[in-house]
Image 1 (cartoon, rainbow, N blue to C red):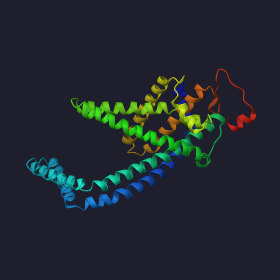
Image 2 (cartoon, rainbow, N blue to C red; image 1 turned 90 degrees about the vertical axis):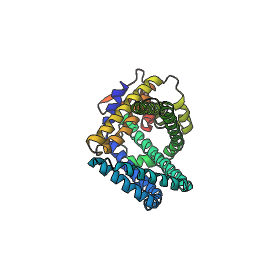
Image 3 (tube, helix red, strand yellow; image 1 turned 180 degrees about the vertical axis):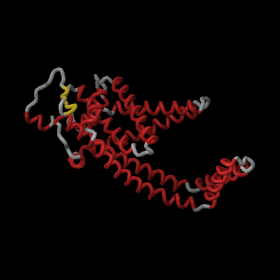
Image 4 (cartoon, helix red, strand yellow; image 1 turned 30 degrees about the vertical axis):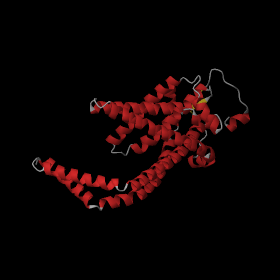
Length: 319
C-alpha cells in the first residue's frame, strides 16, 4: 500500500521533478566550475611533462597495434608505458603536498554540493507536503527562501553525518571485498561490493527517513527531529528497510536504462525524479504511521481509521 501510494504521490507531484532539475543543474554547474578551477592547474602541469606525453603516445601506439593485430610491437610498447608510469609516480611522490591540497579542495566542494542539494531536497519535500496536506501549489524558490533557516540547520547536521557514513562504508566494503576476499573471482567481488553498497545506502535512508517529515510536517525543532528519526520504536524498521531496498533497485535500474538507451538524455528526468520519489515515500511513511490525513490526488483522500478533528486555524496553518 505504501509503495502504491508513493507512486501516486510522485505522479501527482511530478512537476517538482522539473524544479529539482533546474536547481540541481545550477548547483552542478557551480560545483563543476569550482572543481575545474582546482584541477586545471594540476592537469595543465601534468600534461606538459615529457613523461606524460610519452605515456599518451605509448598508449595510442599500444591500442593501434592491438587493433591491427601487430603483436610483435606490443612488448616494447608495454615497457615504454611501464617506464612512463614509473616516472609519473615519482613526480607524484615529490608533489604529495600539492596533490593532498587538491584532494582536500575537492572534498570541500563535494560537501558544498551536498549542502545545497540538501536545501533543494528540503524545499522539494515541503512542496510535496503542502500538496499532500492542503492541495497547495507552492513555488519552489519561494518555499526554499521561506524555509532557508530550517533547511540550512538540517543540512548542517545531515551532510557531515551522511558524508562520514558514506566514506566509512565504502572504505570498509572495499577492504573487505577486494583485500580480504582476494580468492573470489573479480566479477563475484564486484557483485558483493555493489550489494554491500546498496544495503549500506538503504540502511542510511531507513534511519534518516523521518528526519525531513518530522521537520516539515511534524513542526519539530532540528534537534528533536534528529532524535526522533533515530528512535525506531514502533516504526517497523524492517518494513521500511525492505521498501527502501526495492526503491533503490528500481531507481538504479531506471537510471542505468536512461543512460544507456537514451544516451544520457533521459537521466535529466530520472535523476531528479529519483530524489522526489524518495521524498514521497518518506512523507507517505510518516503520514501513515502518524495516522494523518493526506491527498493522493485531487479526487482521493487517505484517512486514518480514527481521525482527529482539527480547528479551522490549525488546518490553514498546516498543523
